[in-house]
Figure 1 (cartoon, rainbow, N blue to C red):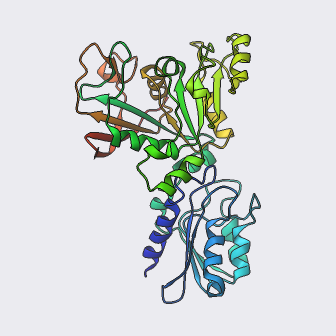
Figure 2: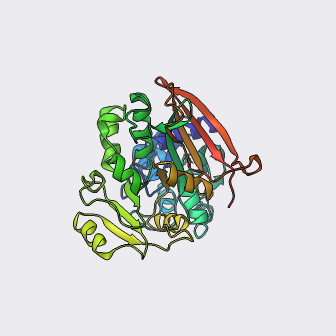
Figure 3: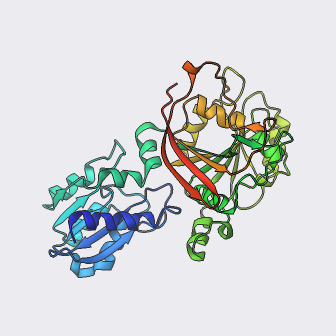
Length: 375
């Protein structure tokens, strides 16, 4: 196998950790002999378990000595829950390491590679860097900018409506699209919604294995790592009996100093964590402060699932990296609710986006776009 084929295999292995490695990055590793034959494979499965390199070394055994290692991310040089992978590679006696991308953490980037070079191991890379970076967009953003990657998910009819005027919305999209959303939730560290969605839709916002349309074991493993559920609630109007406060997934209610302390106590008694953050000029929770807090809590990817007001605010403020819209072959009519609340009145003020993918999901369509909004 060629170098690119071996790195591509490492990328495939890393993808197996799509739903389970957070807050750690998804990493895959392949060990090959001089003839390009694979002698060991591994991937990082879950935080606290061995890293990809250690798994591959265990798989290869003595065959790792003098071999070449292909790893999607620079081997770590520090001790966390597990020891440094760079040290493990040196001890195993590998001859060469080919890496996909450097560690994005500016405080340690390059140190693992230098440790390998100092030990006399040949180091090459980056190789297939764009594909390797695509494995961990949220981890990269958190390490470099101190913010999580934000996806905004919405579902609408063909005429751009999300619910009837009464608020009735079940179901705009079909089961295949809803399974796709479950998988989006599973790869996210946190799901953010607004108090209006909680009050009118009363969602659970958890990951449900039986709705993911994945092989049973993979779905169960994904559902074991439940994302943090976050409610933006500036005045603490969330009911202590709301479904989102129930179940095993943790719930964080984010509010401002203007909220009634007695309501905070009732929510905490119901099992929620209540966090006071600064208010913006409009008196509502400052969304940038919220994202900084989520990054501090090691959230890599954040999914916004909310109504038109909060989703529109995230988008208008330039906090959305990726927009995912499911379009159903239905018409809800002119009195139904819009996709976003956006204060735009002139063509010169429209918000630009770039569509990167469009595909059928069951009977619906999924449009993925990146935003080009700077605020």
